[in-house]
Image 1 (cartoon, rainbow, N blue to C red):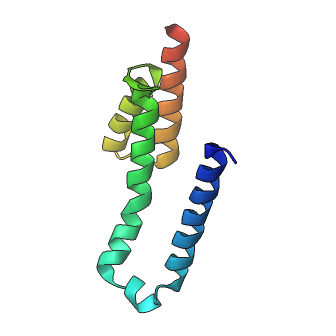
Image 2: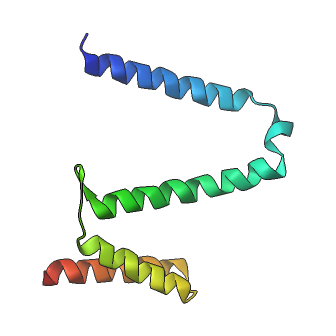
Image 3: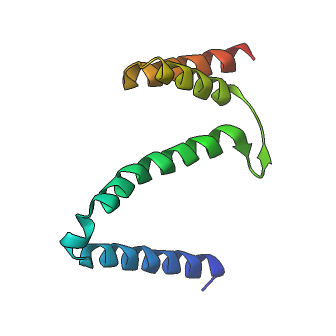
Length: 102
């Protein structure tokens, strides 16, 4: 068995254990207001990290390309309190236009 298969099986076991542990936690512990606030922020933090990594890195080096323009426009549109679909569309259109121009 190769190292890749051992890592794959190990990752699967870790994922299963974490899921099982999460379902085994009593509900009264998860109902705590601090836990609720943290759980609400985790997807936002993970998505932000994914966008940052995908926008500003290529393999193991930093770079700036058309996606940075899209993220910048999305930030400006968010600051203007636009609805989420408008933010996504404006970022996508800007990114595509910069990619096409350069």
